[in-house]
Length: 204
Image (cartoon, rainbow, N blue to C red):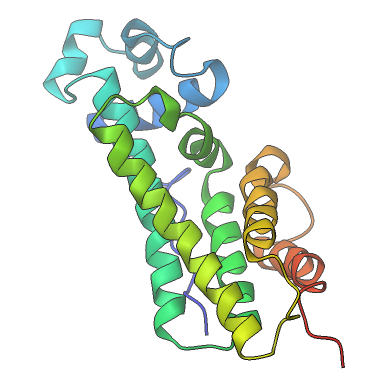
């Protein structure tokens, strides 16, 4: 069993100034990039004076950190939850692919910031985030390896290449996912899982 989808925050009725600031920053970071967005841009998008931002946030760096760390933590929590269930490797990977797409579907723009703009974080935050990103990758690594050991997956599988291929496909999804498309995130995840996992299974 996988996690139930969380409520989508992107379009929720949130009126607090801090939430509005983070929503505006996420949108602007997605559209212009972190370096192309100024505090003045964020303030203008929210409709307040630039100096008033500091009553709610520390800095632009702090906003980026919170957006990225919150996103990475959600992916890790989903993977940990699936891991705890002790599912066969194929089912576990399918469940996490579903969770990944559900998180992307909530706010593709936010997920793009999480995936691509961590490079602008300063130390020690950058190193901490990289450790958290590796935790997510490790779920896929030990799950694929377990599938090989249990003879569910092909014995000749290159685990590292397999994991990087799956993650590469998943991390690209916010580039093309459309909330207004005809398919739900679960339907897309099921199709993606079928494609990504079909080559892993042991041939009889």
